[in-house]
Length: 67
Ligand code: SF4
Ligand code: SF4
Image 1 (cartoon, protein in one colour):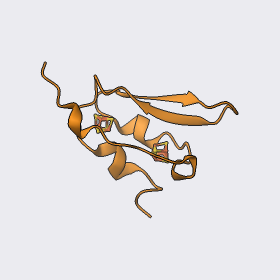
Image 2 (cartoon, rainbow, N blue to C red; image 1 turned 120 degrees about the vertical axis):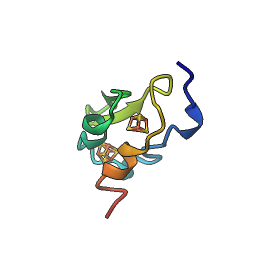
Image 3 (cartoon, protein in one colour; image 1 turned 180 degrees about the horizontal axis):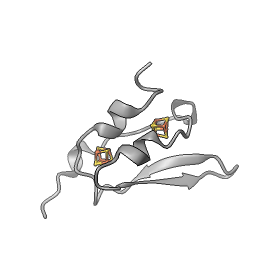
Image 4 (spheres, helix red, strand yellow; image 1 turned 90 degrees about the vertical axis):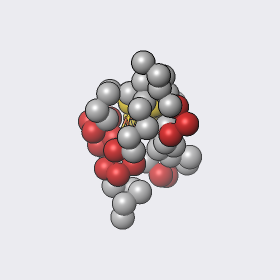
């Protein structure tokens, strides 16, 4: 399948932009997001750009980006 990776979103650039709520991981229709711990054990989302279809649902559901 041809995948357009250009639309893969950036979920956060600073750690303050993510509260680790798992909403994006739960919402992703193709399971492209996995939560991974940082050095302190706090969980942050990582997008697998090879799987992501660029639907934008993870951005829409994020409580930090939609306050
Ligand atoms: S843009 Fe869509 S497919 Fe890509 S990581 Fe977000 S929810 Fe998943
Ligand atoms: S939905 Fe937003 S705040 Fe929640 S884990 Fe994903 S990027 Fe972080």
